[in-house]
Length: 151
Image (cartoon, rainbow, N blue to C red; front, top):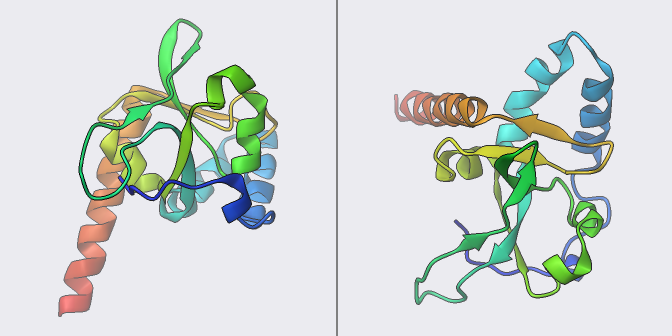
């Protein structure tokens, strides 16, 4: 994980604007075709996580924010830091944000469920199985790109 702690002021207001427009359209598509087409772009996009993160190069353990959704633990992640504002302030006031690529995030949570932009129109739920499969596909895609550029 990136250990660069961020504040909302550090991020441009239009960050991931095009991606968020595609998320809205994909959520309107009941066939899920648009989501299937959007997933590779999402996996390459930078997203935000809330939690308690060690600063600097000293190491330490990252503690991600975990939410309960329908009785399951889910890791929330956000396409834009403004989406974090839906969370209660008492929950986020002591937290930091970090930015990382969604594919790396899915790989790092090791099959845990995740929820993109909870409690917003930009919401998407990923089961633990979804995160495992997408993480493996993402790592395979990165590996194939690396192998193709080395040839």
